[in-house]
Image (cartoon, rainbow, N blue to C red; front, side, top):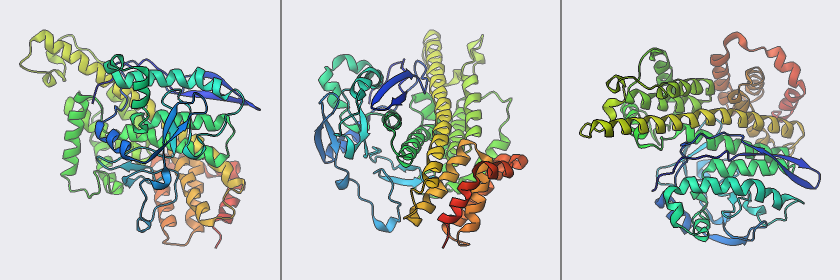
Length: 461
């Protein structure tokens, strides 16, 4: 494990497609501040990736021999687990209500179906990785994806980057797990948008990118200071007897804790380090439940408090977290570094919550087009499954009127007591908790009456 240096990069790119050509536009969909930490490659995870069967395939842009995992031989899931046929392979322990998966401790977190070239940044589905690019595609990759990938790699390697040759860096990142999910999946969804992929394919790419952002928001902090107190908050929560697998194995059982914590939190309280860990944990739980506004509010409050500087160091609530036996000047340096690193990490989480909301809105838009366009006319089970996902994405992205009416119809059109009906009814409760009397169902009916007719067709016996 090595520590990333300050990161000066806006790595996510927006594209514009013209018939037969790919042209780049300005980068910067997610703006990262200096010092924003990215997940760093862990040797155990890299060793696991190295053990997976791969095939060397020449990148169609730069001809680098990319180690493409052979998905058919990877991480097969048992039918007894009842998993949906979703476009990823991951060892996971649990999922959110919209089926976002979370890897278990020490498991491979790599999204095996999406591959990035470690030399130029070209990204595509593994089964289509060697396909020829549209006219102008290679030049677009070189002028946009390549610089953003280089900046991300340098930040991940930190001081070690100066010790490695270019070919060594390329081979290091040829282990796909060495690159953050968010980077790979953002590149993937923007590529699909550029080549005008089907609405369903673009929806899947958008929600996978949103889930990658969520796992960052809900995961443990990377900086040592915040990670210490976050771990303590996790331990305190675990003592309350919540069930496994994993700390969040039963996300519904945590809802009462979340509500009580929200009600008990004093807005004017000056937080100490322990309280920071509690609030990070709480923000992650809110995000996982789909209450993104609540998550962002908590993180923004924490961010502003971390930006505070006190005239006297002994007034700073974080002073006690510095090394007591060090000299005062050393402790002051430690305090400043601690605050800056924590400030940057929390700011990144704020940006990721906002990014997740936008990506889920995009996923919902594409999925609405796919359903209305008849993408599932010949597969009722897939149609109902994606109909539920659409409602979840609508709710999580903040389109509460449409989400409310969608779940209302979904609950009434499916057999009473069925898993889908129960899940839709629970989501209706969440919409009501978020919106209260603000939901205008007539507005939703007016906007998507045709889509609701399609829902009735989908759910017909």
